[in-house]
Length: 249
Image 1 (cartoon, rainbow, N blue to C red):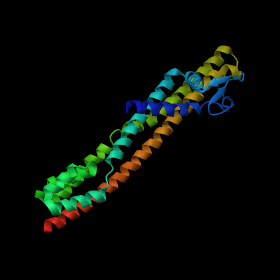
Image 2 (cartoon, rainbow, N blue to C red):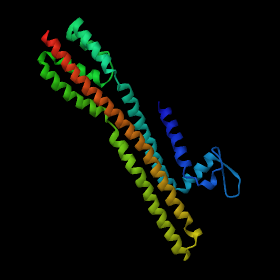
Image 3 (cartoon, rainbow, N blue to C red):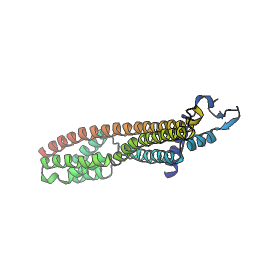
């Protein structure tokens, strides 16, 4: 799994860094050219732009991308496995109640993965205390499951904010370097300020690209959490109705 994370992060980094290479340097998707028309390998061009952007700031931006992607992928995998067919689970629980009572229903929930089954199990544990207690337990334990699903999202949002901030910081430092070069040379010719300006532009673009990539993953995770939450709420209401009918019997 770690190798998969590193491979995906490296692939995204290649795409992100390649996008900051100027249009004049791109001849096709597999080869780049320098000012003399000599062919330059893609990885060499990416490495060059990375160094030109400043190894310090670019390394920090890349670290934000790798850690952010690792956290995002972990959350996506967790939420994917947490998804439960609630209709099938409710039917199984209702059937178990009719055939073997509460203990049989508990066994069904224990053998089913996902937060919905865990909530059902916690509610069934307190069935002997009354349906009202079961309903309160479901609500309380639902909040616990929500917290589990949102675990790590604050770190992803942190990297979304830090990445462009590092890029802008690199921009400011690049501008300072450009003005220092102007002051030292006593001239405002393009050649004097080009180095500092290039650092400023590369770090800014890299930071923004990383933030946009992580933002897409972040919103996707939120959408999955919302979907699972809706399923939990609907299924919990249905479970209370099923237990109410069972209690009347």
